[in-house]
Length: 574
Image (cartoon, rainbow, N blue to C red; front, top):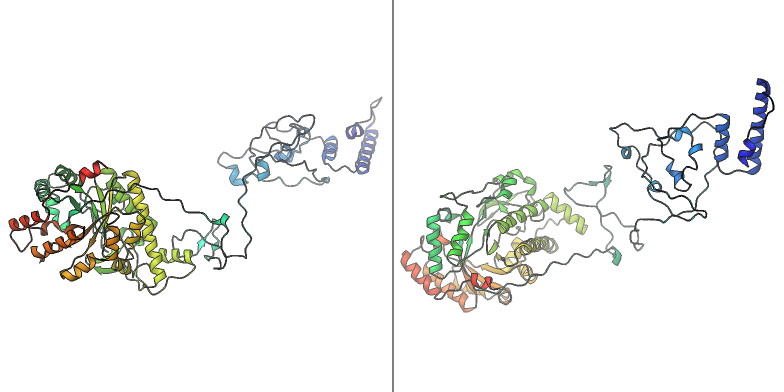
């Protein structure tokens, strides 16, 4: 009807200019009167009228149709009436159209909605062009005789949450103890919900269960640590071969060679080099020291378990500490070192994700590269209680508890929180090792539990109960025999020896403190009587730096282990 009304009236003869002008004005008036009479809601007639009165230039055929209409109309239905100001010019080659104006949600989805009639535009000057948008290409099927709504693909809605009183926002990762910010640089307050608000089941994300690994058989431990004081032997192939043969002859069955001490890797290590830490590449004959120890040990029937002696402890002046000062933990007073049996040292923060990654990589490098039988950590796989006041740890504690860290480092909740974090890391490290080599012995050598937890946040009894440990060699370095026996009879020792291989660490001597053989024999027999193995600290003190002659010491050690007890054969058949 509209097109019929707007059709130019037929003429018999060519009109004059004035007649044509009057005729056009009359036709325009009639057209406007018809539009008002019919109450046309669509802008289609108005646009057609405008194009009849003011014919538009030829439209760019490369310009796509307006996506806002193409979602509802038959393809090409509006091509002939699309205003020229809707045509999209080609963007410069160096401009990403999505950086100019990202497509609207309604432009990138096929909506299952009833067509909505647009509002009637008025014949005013064209509005400014909209932002340039690169629409998502759409394939629209020709409209059937009876319109059928297109299928809708909508995103899965987020699960509904139970309405609760307004709670403060919980912020994200506390990399530094400063206010967090979003992508627009706006500050985000770090707070916690009120304690009386409990999350609904839909809001609680359960932690994934840890993998289960078959327990290793319990074995008698007859071991010895080889420390940096033994480097003359560890780096000399000939002396090392003689030492391994001597231990096998005396029916020892386990060697714990040091591979991590004072911030240095005592073996070729790409991980250590990556963080700027030195390492020992070659022995005296150009050999890989750790590879040679494992070869000589296995050749003589000995299990070899590399010992990460320093754990999280590093000298403050080491290359590692100097290269990564943000990895170090601090005391409440700002001090960064503590005095221990290893001297005055700094401590890597066991809670810092970069520290955890570094130590995990260091361990896994050894596990993957060498044919070892186990790995061992000692009392330095911990954090002295006075530490934990670095910016990262304080921010993390604030995020998880809503509280500031207590100034008292012995606060029970503060101690438990830090100890649990260390336990979680030990579990992750254990799982990484076992996933790669399930038969690898995960060994620890801590102090007795009450001391380890109270002063070093090392809750090793929980580690054992959670199946993170295959072997424990508890250090009981005592001259007084009664004190020594009291530690052997502790409840935690009676518990763990029923579950895993359990031994006692006995001090066999120090460079300036030789231990008489009588004391070593007495303590070894007390352990044997309780069904416990033994390991001696350290190799050269067994008979080289000793008050008795070397031959006598060797004879008396032979009597302590009259029969062989190889661990390799048992693990091989497991």
